[in-house]
Image (cartoon, rainbow, N blue to C red; front, side, top):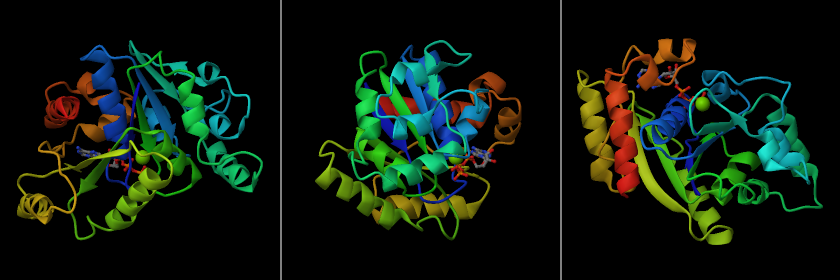
Length: 254
Ligand SMILES: Nc1ncnc2c1ncn2[C@@H]1O[C@H](COP(=O)(O)OP(=O)(O)OP(=O)(O)O)[C@@H](O)[C@H]1O
Ligand SMILES: [Mg+2]
């Protein structure tokens, strides 16, 4: 099982939209067995896939329960080969509990839990919160790959240096195999010159690898979240559907 973290310290850059749609495309168009982990107390990925609740265990229990049976925390979604570990506000308390627990290692809980299901999935995609906290560190420690969605604005590069440092530190200390696959531009507006120039600037900087594929801004994305549907289900012909399919192909070719 390959574990991919989608992460950025910035909010609203399409981490969740990208995680859900990449996971759904890998499962439905590429026939891969995919586990999506919602690693954000906002629970947006769980909501989009219609699984948000307080009745079932989820990522909070992965963080805190010593004897966790990972399979018991996984739920099927409405889509073939796509399963999810959900999140809700309980993750906030769980993260605090982990930080106060000096008995067990704090950073390897995802890694231990995922080892139990490594043969059941081809990919695990982790949708992270816009933060570095103990559960995002757990995600990086458990990951093979990292991708960073960015939107082009005045503040596009904010936090990228800090995040890169966190990735480098995690690689050095805890996870030598961690690969930074690169940034990809989301919510790209081709009628806006600033977006074109911003993407070119990011590529020219050469501080960070940048995916060739960008995800176009489309009016279909927001209603797809209200409809609780992945974008290729909601609007198979919109720009973002086409772009997310290309992004997954580019990632698979790496
Ligand atoms: N390609 C797109 N076109 C138009 N709107 C988009 C696109 N991608 C994302 N959005 C919108 O941008 C907003 C933020 O997306 P999303 O929730 O995925 O970001 P996020 O990085 O996960 O945010 P947070 O940091 O709060 O977790 C949402 O309202 C979403 O509908
Ligand atoms: Mg999100």
